[in-house]
Image 1: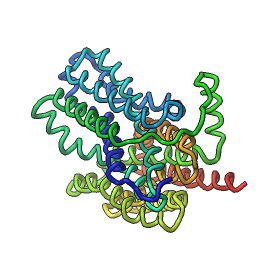
Image 2: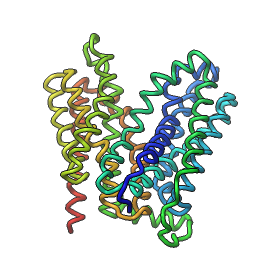
Image 3: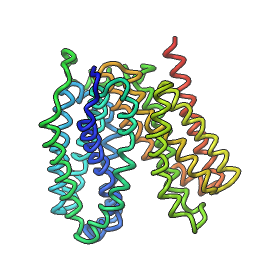
Image 4: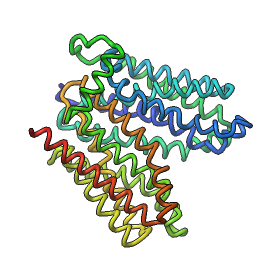
Length: 385
C-alpha cells in the first residue's frame, strides 16, 4: 500500500494498455486492406482479427492464474517484449499461416498485459486515487481505437501495412524499456500452488463460485455485449446529417463522463454502486431510444451512462478483492467475459434486427443492461450473506 501515487508510472502502465488494445485495433482499422496483402485468403482473413479475441475467451482466467504465479512485473515485461517481436515479424507480412500463428501469440501477450497492468495500477495507487487511476485504465480501448483511426490508418494508407505493424512494435518495445527501468516487483505474497491442469480447473471453479472475484466480470459481460453491438448496428438508424458526428462523439462522451462524473461518484459511493447506477441509467436511455428512435441526445446520454460502467467496473476489482492474486484472477475473468461479450454481441444483435427491425435494438440492449444491474445486485446479496 502507498500514500502517494506515482502518476508518471501509472500513465506508463496505461500506455502499455494502449499498446495491448492496439493489438486488436491495428488490424481492425486496416481490415479492408488485408485482402490486397493476402489475395485468395477469403474468409480466413477474418481470423486475423478474431484470433486475439478467441485466445481471450479460452484463456482469460488462465492468464490471471499464470500472471499471479510468475509475478506481475515479469509477466508484463515479457508480454510487452513478445508483443514488440510479433509486430516486427508481422511487418514483413509473413504467409497467412504464420500471420495467424503470430496473432495467437499476440493474444497471449494481450491477455498478460490486461491482467498484469491493472493489478499493478491498483497496488501502486494511493487509496484516494485508485478510483481515478483505474477509471483512466478503463479508457484504454476507446483511446487506442481513436488514435489508430486518426493516425494508424493514415500511416498504413500512406506508407503501407508494414509501417503500421513496425510502429506498433517500436511502441511496445519503448514501453518495455521504460517500465523495465522504473517498475518494481510487488511484494511476494508467498508460494502459489503448482500450476497444473487439475489445479487450473479447480481455480476456475473457485473463482466463479465466489461472489467477489468474478463480480466485476459478470457485469462486464453485459456491458461489452451492449457497447460493441450498439456502436456497430446503430448508424443506419441515425439521421445521415448527424450520423458521423454522433458516432464519433459517443465513445468520447463515454470516456469524458467516466473521467469526470464517474471519478467524482467514486469518491462518495462504492465502485459497485457506480456500476449499478450506470446500468440503470443505460436501461432508461434504451427506453428513450425506443420512444424516440435514433434521437441524437438519447445516443449521447446512453454513451455517458455507459461511461459510468466502463471506469467503475475496473475500480470494483480492487474494491472487492484485497490481494494482488485475487485481483489478477478478477482481471483475468474480466478479460474472458469481455471477449465473450465483444464476440457474441454484434451477431446476436444483427440477427435480432433482421427479424424484428429497429425495436430489437432497445429491447435487447435494454434487457442486457437490466441483466447487468440484476447480476450485480444478486452478487451483492450473496456477499452480505
